[in-house]
Length: 202
Image (cartoon, rainbow, N blue to C red; front, side):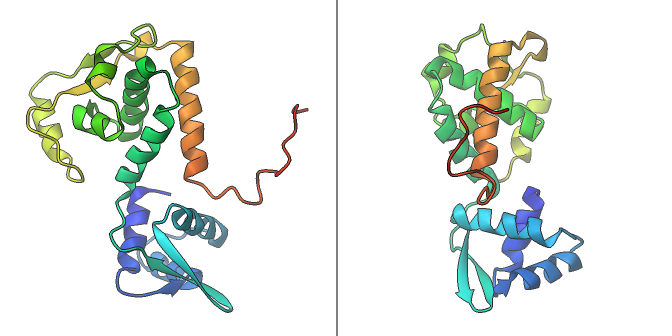
């Protein structure tokens, strides 16, 4: 599922209420042919994230767009903030840059880090033993800054990237833990995760 799909669902539901079948038909007309079970899980995940309202009108469930819902990238920032908060403060900056630069395939701006609760002290005191983080330089950074439309990036905002050759096992462990937590937050795991967990996996 992509950000583009979320945008299309919001546009479809902007002026009407539809069932899963109705949304599926509209998406097919837009070129998205997802399996019904996958679409159902995705819509329920959006419901759980308060992006859509689900209304029971037997025999169907109708979905309605939540007024003022933010875009997926802002959801990602807030989810990242939640899970970064569980890390050692000195690890938050490198982990945030590592994850978001991988997802967005570009350097990460200071404004984005602020949205996630990563501030100047985190940047100054980051644990360089995890990975080398450097400020991005060059004229291309200006064009990159202007290309970001969903948040306001100040003209003087610096951007950061990591040296992939300097990554460590500890960084991989921390980033994997945050990525797994993000996947759980953005997925409907009902009926998949047992209520009574095994102590040991065989």
